[in-house]
Image 1: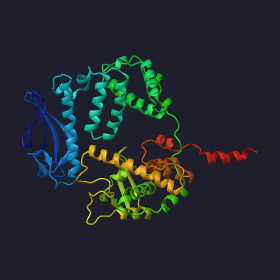
Image 2 (image 1 turned 180 degrees about the horizontal axis):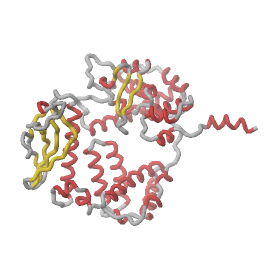
Image 3 (image 1 turned 120 degrees about the horizontal axis):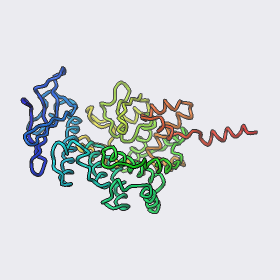
Image 4 (image 1 turned 90 degrees about the vertical axis):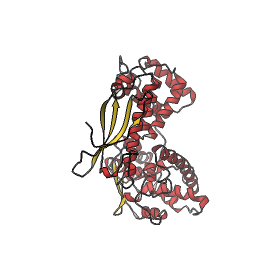
Amino acid sequence: MFDNCLTKEWFVTKDKQMKINIICRNNIINKNGASPLCLRFTHNRTAKLISLGIAIPSEYWDAEQQTVSESCPNWRKIQLDLDSKLQEYEKKIHRLETLGIEVNFDTLFETKNKLINCTVIEYFNHCIERFEALGKIGTAAKYRCCLSLLNLYCSEKTRFEEIDLPFLQNMELFLRKRGNSSNDIATKFSVFKAVYNKALADGLFVSKNDLFKKFKVGSLWTPTRKRAITKEDISKLIGVEVPNESREGYKVLAKNIFLFSYFTAGMNFKDIACLRYGDILNDRVYYARHKTKKEMSCRLIAQVKEIIATYSKRDYSDEDYIFPILEKNIHITEQQIFNRLHKALVRINQELKKLGKEAGIKLPLSTYVARHTFATVLKRSGVDVSIISEALGHSDITTTKIYLDSFENSQIDKAMENLL
């Protein structure tokens, strides 16, 4: 049935009853001369193909190693996508084996069948494994943090049908006694609610009532303190002299990252760190926000060009990172990138707080302050919130409104002058 497929078998189940491999169907050639890549599952001499949505010319496919040739355009991204999808199914199979469930097409591809007997803790782990397999390491880390607290609060045998209003109320009390802030508690409950609703959608249990209409997660959030500085503060920061010495390397980098973010429409730290020279074209930078996947573009003004020039390398390629944070040959997997960015961000924010004090800026600086400052400066200049939302790459204008208070204290003070 699947003749002319370039393939090599990979056994992934303990009993070797299920085989999984990546194939290039070179008997199918599209109008661009490319052949589709698929996952092929074989069980009891029956095969099932899952399309990967990827097609490449067959000459770029190494059938022996089941990898994409490095000569293939975009080979690194394609290979990472393939590895992530393969790992996702391997983890699914491992999960079934751990639960003692037979691995077959029904249990592997039907969520309801394979997870119907799992506990809350088990389902949390399932969600985390899926995020990791999809390369969403940051989201997986957030879920893992919530899970660690859940392990302290409830029994590992707790099932979804046992969760009721008192369970949630006591969980909130438990977190407050631990010293968690209101917004941290709200974050944990947002994750818990997402997992609860996903389990409900997957048919793991039947809810007798809409639990989260009674327990309102939104009411847990409290307003955060102001996180934007003024244009005058930006000038102060620019005026801080930082010796360009090796021991001061992070201090220089911190200042440049903050200003780069401010002058590129509040670009997020991860998006900045992942910028490559190939993302720059005709004095503009083009990138996709890692958080929302939204395609973004920003004009490079003189200050930004000067920062980029600071880190220019000789004979750089389009694949080279602009900033000295990630190394293309070292930080390859999503987990490696996540770990490196987390470590660098902590150090950069530490240096920004020192820079802020030196500049005489009262608000503690961080990369997040740069993003908020960009949005607030535009708002103070009379720019419409919808335009600010587009510039920030938000998927919903509501998020932008959270960034921006409806009225600043200075505006209210001025309005008060009209009372008499």
